[in-house]
Length: 518
Image 1 (cartoon, rainbow, N blue to C red):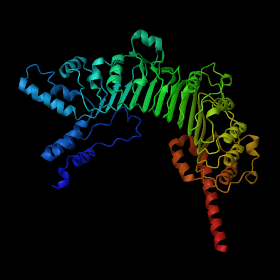
Image 2: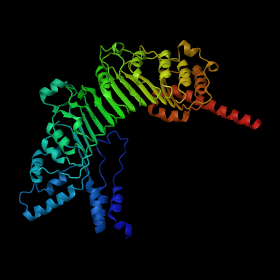
Image 3: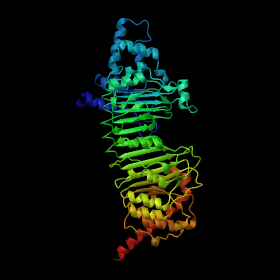
Image 4: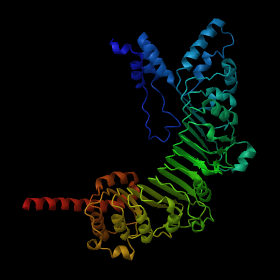
């Protein structure tokens, strides 16, 4: 055997690659790790020789999806175990439990409360896993965190994620409280703050029922990522005042208590979800001089009128990306006016913005050429611009092809564009390629123009306009993008894409011919 294989650190790194690869793009990546892990391969390596034994076992036990194997080591189910054998098993328990670094509990069978109580009495309040770094809990039936589960919390914990999913589709917040279907865990979260408050870097709570506990985020002094969401909100449960190290904050605004203001000097990413009025009030109380990304999902009520709201007073000078999503499920298809949206978000529209996305779910989005001109004048350095509308199109008003010329002239660094277009209005019909702005070079490669249909007689002029305004378009990249939305895009845009490709080939051929003649 090579001498390098006698070094435990090298062996540990080698066996660490025995783990099954988990795709980070998998939507269930954080909730349910893929099974089965290749434990058989690690076990065979551990049994191969003494040099491989401990490094392979450490990797084998480092990631656990259940705590069932530890019950036998603690002799909780064996009434007639000799004392010598019980002592040996418990020594093995202390050894193996110290190797566990990541624990994912996805099954209610793990919450065998009597066993857990016995284990707590045996461990004498010591952590179940003294070196645990990542803890994930997924509750399905009973939204309760027993205080005894605090024994899983160690002083080395870096990340804690809690997902609660109970069947509460037809119940409101008050009804959930009356039936006792609320997330109870005050003792657990107090223990989390006491034991891991100075080491915890990531804390995430995602719940579809009412949160029945209160905590202060200030008790977690090392947090860099904090996420708290709930579909049923009764009152604020998380208080803030100052978070020096926090870099990412994702929250339902109804759960946050920032009445005295929130100073987050290191915050770089802020995602808020909730009613538009409450979200604007929360934004006005946040001081984040280094904020680079802002994403808001704002719910519009049946009686909400954006024209009555004052523009947000927030000022984020370092913003590079803004994503605003409006949802209007209770508005019965009422339209949303772009001029009201632009007035509302005007404080965050700055020359430093590189990405901006505005979308409306639930009805038509009224967007005109004048609105596009107003927006473009405020964001000259933008690289990605998306304007979308999802819902009934009965009162939809979209900009004409003239908006493309405005964007090409006002956004010289734009690389990706998504915009609804009305190809049948007079401004679009009268627009000719020889009368539009002609940039010498424009970096735009991907354009997604949302239109209901494209007539055959419009394809040549439309392709020529796009090719004139954006000479660096890449139709092959369009094909890959539209492949995901084949039913919607293929019949509308494929002819335009093919026509642009022909124009680009003709231009390339013409340049080659000129070079040959010269």
